[in-house]
Image: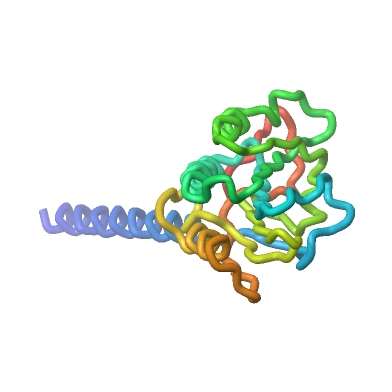
Length: 205
């Protein structure tokens, strides 16, 4: 009987340890920020389109198979509803050469297309993302009417976490009253640098 009790206690302790370890891992994963590269402080001449006069320009770079990015698009929708017509918004979805069109035009693409005022682009092998230093899905950039960088980073508080966050608030503050300093936040999402195959879609890291 004594041995049975010890075994039961041991199993309970092992279970609690496993649960605690799992919770700690998930928490760490959700708050693990992605990489970013060098972002031009002024709108580059080699950009794929010209700035719209008298409007801020918001760029968002996205991986079409990244589950974390769904929360980013929800926040983008909410952000633009508060910006009115003061922002020209472009979303660039990674397109890998050799993959079928529906790999890029995924459910995330459809969700982004439903956001009023958003222009979508297919970014072949991430060429535009690299030009703007975007290495993680969900990376957002805000440029003012003169092409000066005002914000770089993510607009969620964690991986796949929708809700109030510092990035969204910083963008709104810069639009309402532009400051000379560049605001920055961590970005949470899948890598835009990883090559994927059709049978191995990108998953959140």
